[in-house]
Image (cartoon, rainbow, N blue to C red; front, side):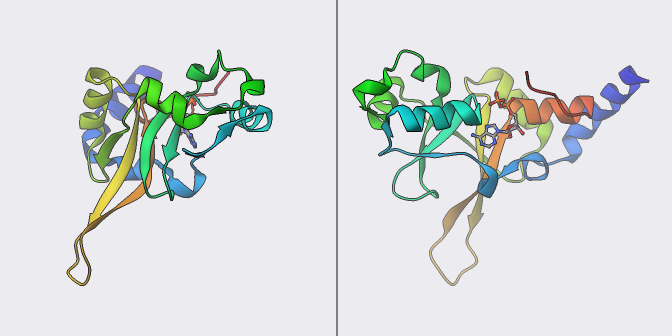
Amino acid sequence: NEEANIIAGALQLANKRVEDIMTKMEDVFMLDINTILDFETMAEILNYGYTRVPVYDGDKTNIVHLLNTKELALIDPDDNTALKTVCRFYDHRPLVVDYDVKLDQMLQDFLHGNSHMAIVQRLHNDGDHDPYYENLGVVTLEDVIEEIIQSEIIDE
Ligand code: ADP
């Protein structure tokens, strides 16, 4: 039955890592911090329909901000506002987690923190080059809840 499945899903949280449930970087909709919020761009953002959009500076490996799309509600596309200005005003640094963090820990972080999305990273320090972090994907509270209830949440 459904309740037993939810309990089983909750018990499995400690056995799964964020890497197992994340949305991979290649599928993540992101914005360049130098984007101008003209009509076309704002229409594109609305079309994707995501609540949270990572913002990168320079290249996609350098995520500097997490845009909450509700922050765009009062922006007039005719003003050609710079995304950078919005980012400066709200100043949301992205939450970052290691790829092998377990889902029970991730759930606690989401519930006690102030962000429901985290950037999943992996440290590479295999000797030949300087250590660096690779962004593997994003994980949200909804991804974790889907593991508990063991079914997809259909967005409205
Ligand atoms: P939303 O509130 O935008 O619908 P959710 O947090 O409910 O987002 O997550 C729904 C699914 O979409 C999850 O699998 C999550 O990893 C994915 N997701 C969230 N934001 C993005 C994004 N900017 N690009 C790609 N996938 C995303």
